[in-house]
Length: 163
Image 1: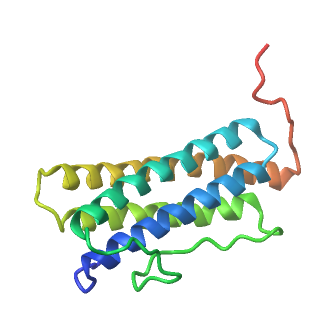
Image 2: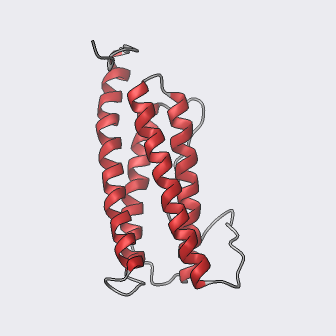
């Protein structure tokens, strides 16, 4: 992912917008599932996106103190979008979210390069890149499990309940 053609403010706004959209997506997905364990993981991911957004907003405000933080409806930065409607299967949403998480990891690695190596911002953005891969792995495990349930039309609401 080559981000060199984009201005830093556009990249930061794209990151904020992406984190907002991811939070909304994971929150909606959590409500869509009957699986409490998956719902909990999705809520966890939604909360992670809130933390990422707050950090990126701080960077924006520190670099552009005279600009209002105004999230555009569209950004020039090509980040994948997850298409969700009421008929979209959960496994399909998980697949799309995995693509978005991989892209977010690549995005944060490249964005980190815009800041001095070893600086707090650089290190935190590299950490975000690693976290996005962690999110990808969580989604991958759940997608594989979900596909088995959808394939066999099997669901046990208390499958994760202990004795």
